[in-house]
Image (cartoon, rainbow, N blue to C red; front, side, top):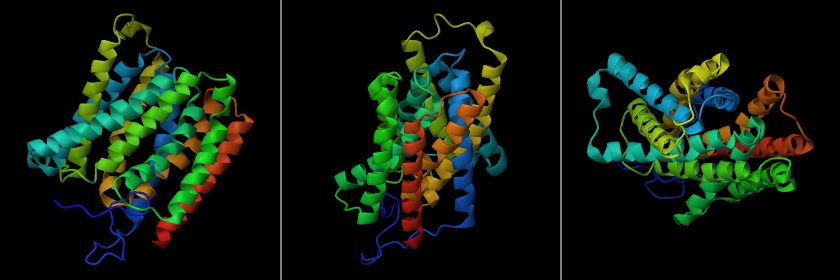
Length: 319
């Protein structure tokens, strides 16, 4: 299936000036509802991850989360739409697996690892660099993002610079900061290529395959790191079990499915704005539940990235 060209920061739609281009995807109420789920639920998952890794190993817990959620979603799809909805060819299966590994192993699980070294709110704020990588990827593929895209990215990067100050000064572990940035690169690549390779036509089936592939990848990395050697199920606290259950049901099954649907139904530049909104939720929850400090870099940097998302959203709506 032929996919249209990207928009402002890589969204799957074609510029109006190109003869015969595909029309801009309409931003409907359903799109905004799905965005609200991703905004709020994924904002809360940073807290859930921080509580989970208190007594669970990072990669093994992430592997269990995604594999279980993926299998559960596949069962729901087969039940509601019939087994035929899960049928894919080899190219579609390979594409879904690649995207799942980029998003969940390279993206999410690295954030899980980083949260063993840095506060959950800071991890969420660092993810704000995602739209910048989308623009870089778009430019690398020969496209020319508009001035508004560059302006929004510049504002977001300015906020990111402020947020990294604690890591540079030694207040937090710098390796944790760098791992989150590496995770954003992997997540951005996965999001970017998902609209350019032969994915399963059913977005929910695609999400299921992505989560199973990502879960298996996380589990293999966890075993390779020897996380199972010092791990005992009896050592897991009740609140870690509750947090993992929340991540499976809401963070993966609900929010990730909404995100996968958005990648097929909305401009990627608009979808990527979750990276600016999630931190607000994450910082508030981290401060209230885990007593994480809200320092001046977090307040100032957070304010800057929120301004950036306002610019990107307003630009996309005008398009």
